[in-house]
Image (tube, rainbow, N blue to C red; front, side, top):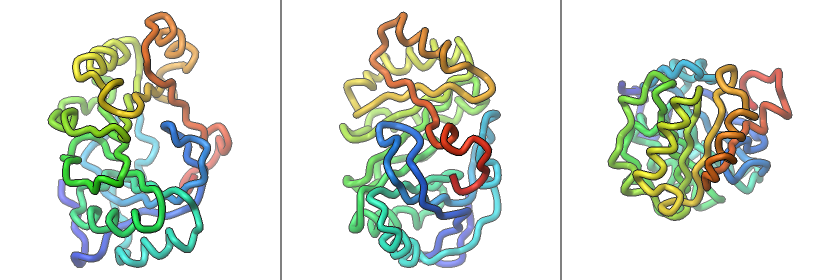
Length: 221
């Protein structure tokens, strides 16, 4: 799926907002979010379906200036799938000049071109998502020590699959953190926690802090 944007220095943006980072080891930190529009997946638990389509064109320079003006110490570029738009790399190069920069990707695109200063949050799709056949496996070899991976887990089969992938690619040694997230409405956090404890698995139980703070919020949280 290709996301069209009007010019080479413009990106289609779904929304921008300041909030609290709700996931990964950055959870709890104030963060400025740039959510780009367009996605090539249709995960059955997706909670940002409004980002699948549409979006409005924003100049890259303006997005970077807005982050700087927000005075947030952290910025995350997310989606949708941000790497579908080639201009995302140019945006990241500007953002890293103004603060720590995260890029969250659904794992279907090559992350090797990302600037070395950017922290990649790589979402590895489990079978329960309905999209595991689209994982771009060469990404496992280019993860860096500051990067993190995330598995959204719908049930026991997903857990065993994620545990196998974590071991196969030595992810706990290759990157900064491996996050296991219970899919909301599919798996209770208590059950996932029990599995992790029983297996003494060196991963991080990843709960969505922003949804605990603003349980009824829609967009922009």
